[in-house]
Length: 566
Image (cartoon, rainbow, N blue to C red; front, top):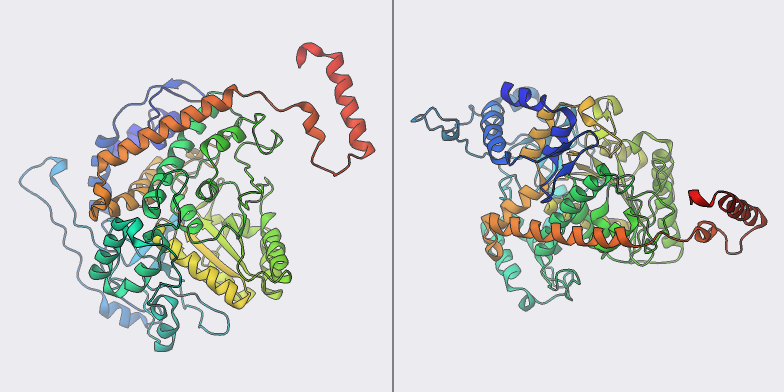
């Protein structure tokens, strides 16, 4: 650990940025000095595996109930876990630690949260609020295996509660999934294997749309394989984030924000929604828009503010929007989309639409705004079909959750508003999908809101205007990137089940292909001309008022006076 800390201090923020970025095949240009990326990833990971796993091993403890008395919990605690270590050699690479399914998860601010593998929305007027810490719902562990429930630290012991769980009450999916297994035999085989290996999760396996083929071929993959597309788009988004962040460092675009480490929230949620659902996002949900069909060319056109940009160059980069994809344009002010989502849902209710909800994404920092309170209170009192998804990634720019709130996160506020709530592991794409799916069905059936808190970690800077080394350590970032990366977890799942013969070589090849696709789209976007200045005044009013006409004339006069400047 001392060696890691010493190494991390040698090149400050440039080494940190290099650590976070995937290789783009070109030289990485930071805002300070050009830095050539060293291929030291394998060496660092070997050292990290040695230090992190031995000093902080996953601790398998007996399942315990949150409402058990302290002495009962203590009585259930087993001896320390066995760690197998090869003592025949003093080499650091000779030590290994057996993976143990954890009972609790630790997030930023040392918040320790009990795990449950049972999907259950806490519903107002029907369920008791969890005592102590709200549990986090998880299906898949870091090694790519599904949980068997034996290590859960939170157990529902109320038979009435268990019987009402959607995950156990719906055992058939024929009316839910409208696709043909013959279109994708690999997914059918995978589902059969999962049902046999994890019989207690058979109902969820059969209902999880990530494990079913689509009705039609996806345009970007020319395949009906939903799971393979989810993996491919996670890779695509990560490569896009890396390259466009580097483009900003090189001065080619003015601004960028990455979502590295939070991709499972995007694709898990988006795959559980319908095109008719209205999306109101913040500025770190690129994956949701990508899943709906926004292309790499459209992403890069927007970031380069060229004439093909749907916003005509009038928005900052990453402030995407698409009427065709039912994705409302991003606004910079914090939290404004929350009451807007309540209003959109109320409109759906008044129009009598029974097949659509509004979905609002925001960070835990937004939960400290007055818009959060107003939006949730409106949604609850007006009984609006809206899903609020809070991605708790540990930091609101530089403000850690330790300084953001003193209570149990964000989901614990749901009972106070009289709405349903659930906390989910945001690094588990299958769990996020299941939670959002159940929330959507609840919202439609009851015409009522749901609050979801997805726990994750922001691996990158807040934005290209931020240097997160000033408020957190390289060691912390390395730990979460190594221990809980959502892409690594999904790839571990795919390799473990030998899905479509996927291997590390397959993953590297996919990353290289996506990298070239992003670079190609970026080059085309960079060559396109900028929008006309005349369009600066359009699309505000149906008929341009006199005040805007006057401003337009003032701009023309100014440009005519200083022609060499424009």
